[in-house]
Structures are given as C-alpha cells and as structure tokens.
Length: 338
Image (cartoon, rainbow, N blue to C red; front, side, top):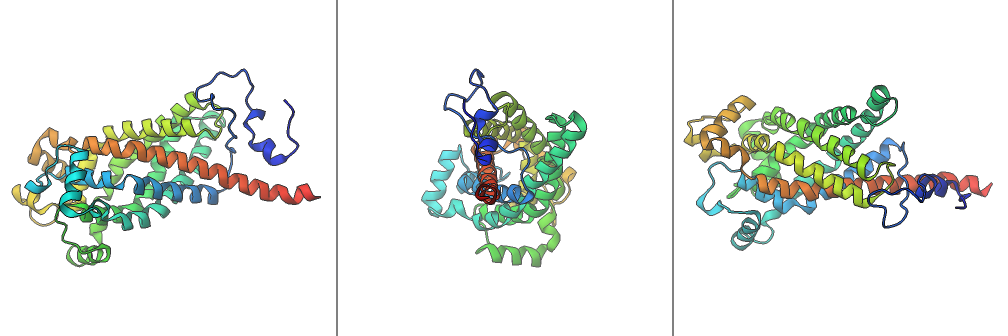
C-alpha cells in the first residue's frame, strides 16, 4: 500500500496503523480514520459540550417519565404501568410539549458541565495511566478519572437537576424556569439547589466509574487500536450506560426525592420541613415503599441511559476527531505551501 505524503492523511489514516490481515470486530465497513492520541483541552471541552447537550435533549421525554415513575406516592392521575403508556398519557392529558418541560435548564447546565467532565476525564485518565501502566490503558485509571470528573460535573449540574425535576413532576406548581428558581430560593434558600449533592455524588461516582471502565473495556475488545469507529463507540456507550444505570437506580430514587421534596409522600411518614441527608432519605424511601421502592423507574432509567450514553460517546468521539482533523489541516496548510 502506497503511503500518503500529506501529513494530515498520514496522521489520521487508519490504514497506516492497521494491516489488511487484522481480523477485528466492526471492521467490515472498511478503513476508519484514527483518533489522534493527544488533542487539546479546548477540543475535549467543545466535543464534550455538544455531546452533553445532545445526550440530554434527544431522550429528554423518557427522563421526564422516569422522574414521575420514581414518585413514591403519585397522584392517581400520574400512575403509569410503563414508559410508552406514561408518555402517551402525559401527551393526551397535559399536552404534547409537557414531556419537554424543564428541557431549557437542562441544556443550560449540560453544556458547561459536560465540557468540564470530558476534558477532566481525558486529562486525568492520561496522567494516571502514565503512572499506573507505563502509558498503557489502566481500568483503575479510567474509573478514578471518571470519579474525579463527576465531582466537577455534578457541581455544575446539580442546581439544574433540582429545577428540572421539580418542573417534570405531575401538577408542578411552577410557571416556568425563572419562577421555579425564584420560588425555591425564597422558600428554601440557595442550599436547596445542593441538598442532593452528596447523594448525587454517591450515585454518580460509582455510576461513572463503572460506566467508564465498561466503555474502555469494550473499546479494548471492539476497537483495540482506538481508531475513530462509530459502531464501536455506540455499542460500548450503550452497554456502559445500561449496566451503570441498573446498578445505581436505588440511589437515583433517593436523589429524586431529595430534589423534588414530595409533600404528599413526606407528610404521610410525618416528615416536617425539608428532607435532607442521605441516611434520612434511605430510611424515608424504605418506610414509604420497602425495598421495591428503591427500584421505581428502573425500566425508564435504563431506557433513557442506554441510548443517551451511546449518543454522548459517539458524538463526543466524532467531534473530537473532526475538530482535531480541522486543526491538523490548518497547521499543515502553511507547511505544504513552503
């Protein structure tokens, strides 16, 4: 095979790295272009922001259903048997746009949160892998990097989650985004936006640690040379999202109760004021519904996370590849004209 003299093609062309006789999964569609091993922080942040916004918007109606299905004492008009039936009922009784309520604050939070998230993950993963496995891929490094990135991501995203979930609930009293922010601040104080932060971290750190380890493990099997390969990114992302979501559903139920402060449910177990603290929340959930209560909305959570995570990874890897290719072409331009 004749090598290209173009430095951009040489750097990105997968055929320079992979031989014809390699027999690996997802290679039936022909050669893919290689993901550059080191790209700028700005590239990671831009790719992460786009991926985060798309991840949350495409499957947002299912996220609305999940929040309602996790309600521990729902109204008789908001009791659903499944995701499809819930969406159908919400649209028929509350309007076609009702499942999208709270999407605006989600988009505002998701962009910067995911920009920080992916940039931090890539930087920490590379640094830890260099130490732990002599520049190789370390599953422990992947998990630790995901955990560190989650702390920063949730610090940005937690207030948006509080507003979003309150607007998603059945018979939500808030007229809109700004009304919700003002009302919560006036009645409960600014601390209300971080009341679930410790629970969110307790849920998301294991979620993201498992998520990143599964994604990277599957990439080793499906895409060992780490080329830009859309099929492998989608499959790996979907599997990582589904498994992580299933494992952490009980913590998500607790987070939803802390964010929404369901008055009817809390009053029924004589909780006065505002519920706070992870231990208190676990006890309250158990008193309201026993062990089954910790798995309310599990189906909707998995249905939401599986495609969402697949979308996030495939979009992130594409934009990382695309932006890096543009940068390399720009840098190669002046050299080629000399």
